Amino acid sequence: MANFLVQKSAPLYGEVEISGSKNAVLPIMAAALLAGGECEIIEVPKLKDVEVMSELLKSIGSSVTEDYDNNRIKISTPAGVSYEAPSDLVKKMRASILVMGPILAKTGFVRIPLPGGCAIGKRPINLHLKGLHALGAEIKEDSTCVEARGKLSGGNVYLDTPSVGATENIMMAATLAEGTSIIENAALEPEIVDLASFLNRMGAKIKGAGTDTIKIEGVKELTGCKHSVIPDRIETGTFMIAAAITRGNILLRNVLPDHVKPVIAKLRECGVVIEYNDESILVIGDAAELIPTDLKTLPYPGFPTDVQPQFMSLLATIKGPSVIIETVFENRFMHVHELNRMGADIRTEGNNAWLRGDKPLIGAKVVCTDLRAGAALVLAGLAAEGTTEISETYHIDRGYSNFIEKFNGIGAAIVRALD
Image (cartoon, rainbow, N blue to C red; front, side, top):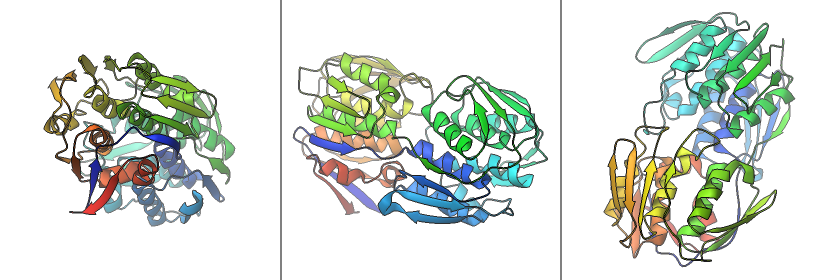
């Protein structure tokens, strides 16, 4: 297994091209199961999670052609697909549950093991099942797997919380249901909008994606199409923070600034200068001495929980007190112990973290506990004296395309080494 060796960095300077969104491409790949023809997806990031989803679709019966050199995938799915997803693939990735709605809509029956993924807190699938049940599915579940069967028809679904995955699964299933379906208290994330755009290109009739009420008129069939995935807003936020934590100057291309407004606002509160247009963001981290700020994670359009660990690393380098309140996942402070091993002064209680950035960070041996925690440790390593050795870095490969290459291209010194 590979470790990352991260050296203290001079200010990072240069340009970074942001890849397609991990959280958008995975449901889009799952939605391709619904099509009666070939789907070509472009701006596909080369990620371990994309590879797992590709293998999962193949195991169900789809034909998948990967062209990662050109960031493209082609998916064709026959009328008769397997109703069961293999447990060894499903348990590797939380997003595997997203094949449930499409398989059920296409075959009338699906059996899927409970999914795996990052251990950042309880993420039950009860809202997925509630939604599918509202569309007419009969649900059976035990401690290891869940089954759903039945011909789907239009229904009204009110989500107790605006779950992204549940919104996506229900929306996909409803495209082939007979009649009209409405999802209330739906998630608002840009990835929901991108999925709806893909489905509509296939012939679906979806309105309201990006609002809290989504209306889906069922159609008899969907066809293949070509679709370009939106840029990854979490990767965008990570490199924005990299400019700040190294007091550097980075130009980010292939971005949608509207998707990272909360990150822009918080970085500006710290004293970071940010300039942007429709397609690029310039982050200047050395314009003034940075000051601490407080933040609270919230569902979109609030500050994203997936950027909280990286921002914590930044705050650990800024003199003075700050507070982080995590409201999305109850176990998303696992990186705190590792940052404290590097000399950070962070105390947690419940979903609150109190930081004092008065101590310099020092390189240490730390463990990547999940995807975004891994990115946070790399950022901390760039600011820490000496060498930071990060283990369990396969988490990072799950969600960042060409991670080391992009960082080293703007002046970092990160090496992948076998432990």
